[in-house]
Length: 183
Image 1: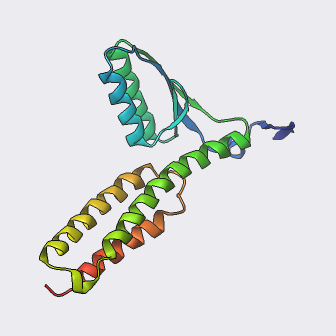
Image 2 (image 1 turned 30 degrees about the horizontal axis):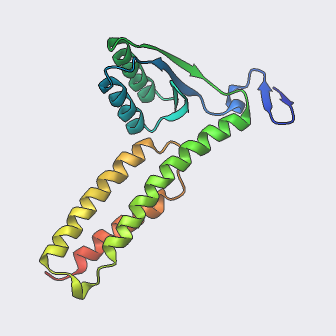
């Protein structure tokens, strides 16, 4: 393994794939502007998967058999809607580029965890003396909703976003606080 370095680049050359970092599934696509429904459906699916928007018409996910299958389904749907799509497996040759992809994905997911954390703290800020039956019902709904959000976010958390544990702990504290309040 040889690493070539430049002023603003760093490329690993050789046979040691592990040194290159994460393998990625790329989806390169084009969809007609009209009708807009397939474009919107694709955008929602890409968001749901937690894909990284590399550029216009190019998204990436860390390689796994699950992600590869999802991207292949998206490519098929794009072609069915008069578009063009190709699926690629690749590794950035630059360690810096790989780190940037991972950091961008981690930051996106961390922002979602931060929103859950803030919502859990807000729901918990209602003091026990202020809780009546309706507030407790709302708090239980909040716990169910936040646990669902955590499951969906966790499915896209490929690189252990820093706020994940704090968000999960805050939701569980909220659930325990509700259980301890007498009816």
